[in-house]
Amino acid sequence: MTIWVDADACPNAVKTILFRASERTATALILVANQSISVPPSRHIRTLRVESGFDVADNEIVKRVDAGDLVITSDIPLAADVIEKGAFALSARGEEFTRDNIRGRLNIRDFMDTMRASGIQSGGPAAFSETEKRAFANALDRYLARAKK
Image (cartoon, rainbow, N blue to C red; front, side, top):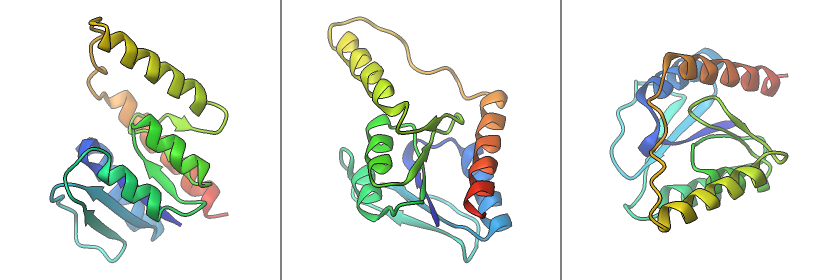
């Protein structure tokens, strides 16, 4: 099993949690980004730098992910694609994307895109909080515990 990270927009606090979990559980962790990412020295952690461009990192993750892998992303279409391949998806805020909830999330995302395109400003996501950091760490621990069984 591998943990893939859509790393360009992933909060540093989440990366730190992932680094520790990867070492603690000896789980492969690959951070995919279109820029250099600093990672601690480890035989379990590596980076994969891709070309700049729209969805280049997402497409690389979809190409390489296997069933049973975990993808850390807040990108709803990427989450849908990896779920379709039998992988699991978790947002940096601790939300588990599943076959049961991904279509609804895609619909909300598309609706919000339509609203923004028509000039309605909805604001962005709230700042990343300690509560969300804990929610992510707890969701990651639950996933790793299930995966190691």
